[in-house]
Structures are given as C-alpha cells and as structure tokens.
Amino acid sequence: MAEKARILLVDDEPSIVKMVGKRLEVEGFDVLVAMDGQDALAKARAENPSLIVLDLMLPKMNGYEVCTMLKQDARFQKIPIIIFTAKTQEKDEKMALECGAEGFVRKPFRAQELLEKIRTLLGTPVQPGEVQ
Image (tube, rainbow, N blue to C red; front, side, top):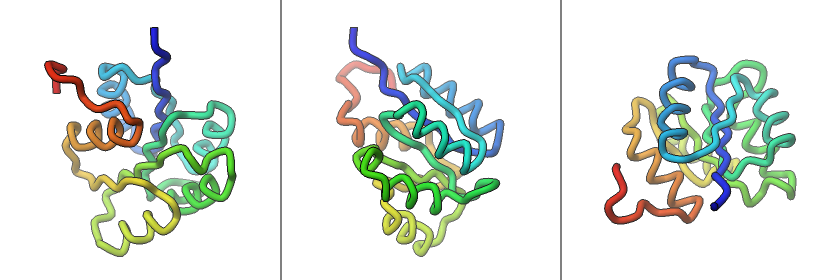
C-alpha cells in the first residue's frame, strides 16, 4: 500500500482547519495542523510534510516569513507550498511567489480548486472515475 502524502495545513481559523482538514482526509491525505507561524515551522521541521497549505495572516509569524524561512533551508526547498489566503490583490500573489510558494489559492475558495493544485504539485492527478 502506498504511503499517504502528508499535508501540513496552517491556518488560525478553526472552522477553516476543520473543514479543509476533513476534506483532505477524505481525499486520502494525512493531515497535520499548525495554528500559527512558529508552530508551522516547528511542525514542518519535525514532520517533513509532502506539501504545505499556508495562510498568510497568522499569529506570531506571517505566512510570507514562514515560506521564506522554509525555502531558504535546503531540506524544504523541494516541498511545495500553496499560499491559502483571504488577501486578494495581485501584489499579494506576486509576493507569495517571490518568497518561494508554488501555488496561490484565494479565500473564499472552491475545495476542488485547492485539491487540484495539491494533486498537481504532488504529481498525483485525479484518476478517471474518482469522485471530485
């Protein structure tokens, strides 16, 4: 049996964490959760996730800082990061990509959009006949 991809979900809104985390688990992912920037760094370092879904507006350290710090560390340069945020201006997406993120999803969001980005970055596209 193939090992589940581990996704680190970083958001300080419990309702978002619960909803997105449950959907990712239903889709077959192992979900880790961090509620602030410092916890996100600690969990990334301890758990070595396959991918990180990262909010920008976080307590203790914002998502830009977390993304930059992870991407400056050789151990995490190949781990895809999707910025997942209510910030909707083009400059926000540009800054996210400049700090090393591979994807950007705006809230409010469609679950399918986030799942497609995750699967694309992990190289696991939806199989024909799979529930979407």
